Image (cartoon, rainbow, N blue to C red):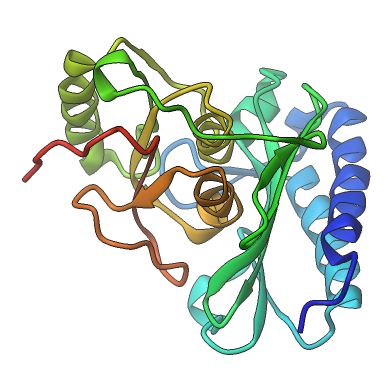
Length: 257
């Protein structure tokens, strides 16, 4: 049973971690390469994740913790509570001062998100949702767009750590933008999903994401009246990497093989 005020306590913790991002300096001295081209972790990623892990598990001691800087295959989220966390989504942006990065925290119950917080400290935008209770941005209820794909703004990620997917990513993007209005690429999947949840864009996809990239924001999309799935319309899982799409309720998926 989720305790009362847990979501607001999660928001407070995430805000404190956002202050760490805003105070960051000399970031390039603490950059470390991970597997995959352009896949970096900074000392700040690690610092924020350590703080999130300690503070969140103090709120829900029985939960397990799945963070980007941990080993995914060692954490079972299928039973009970699990925090699914990306300490800094959009690390490449963060290292360059591009100011399009966020903190993403979901609490899952038996494998599926029930609470979600995404915080963009640069824009001072806090997105949050509780399953069955709607989605909010800075205290105001948000709704997915009711525009069709033909009227839609298309967002996508290039799956930059997976070179073999780049060509297909642009092929899918071309297919959708040929039907839609225009195309955007931010470098943060969580923020892109929040753009769909808040009605600022109509469609998002990325061919391979990890659960921490989308767990919190997928809940936001659903609670805002939008739809999330893979590229074929199958429900999302939160225990493995997969293709992710998000869209407004009037946007139909295109046939893709």
